[in-house]
Length: 225
Image (cartoon, rainbow, N blue to C red; front, top):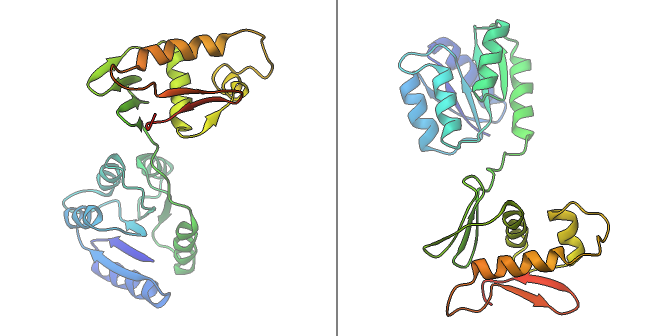
């Protein structure tokens, strides 16, 4: 793994770097918080090992800054601050693991290897787009081109489902289960009614309807329509 160690104690840094290099990892060392933050944000790393008490920028601030910026690299705090409150604040800041000094090198290796096996977190999708139609999941807004579109909560949920399955035919049963949480046929035209309302709201003059009815099958949202 490509590892960045942010550690201001030279002897400790050399000891860790030598041991992890012998274990097959590629190590780079930053001796203060400012350089560590600069290098952590400027390159891709498989793992970050960070001390809590650093000159320039402290370890907690580094981790918070990285997480706020969307950096999902695994982070291990390696520090003398071993109180319960210290561990809690470190993990709450966004670290994946916490090891206190003094430490057994075998445990450090085990924790490094365990973090290396973890799948990377995938940043959650917040915006869906199909052609010029855009749905913002955080702001709960919809636009087509430059035109904002006001939707009722159920219409928003219906459009979200259709956009997540853009280019696929979705059946009436799929919509009843996913949008209305019905696991039976209510024997109403609730789907058809909402599709009709949604289609009229997202329609753009001079363009074909994005939502197509596939006879005998269901509905298809397609940007090429």
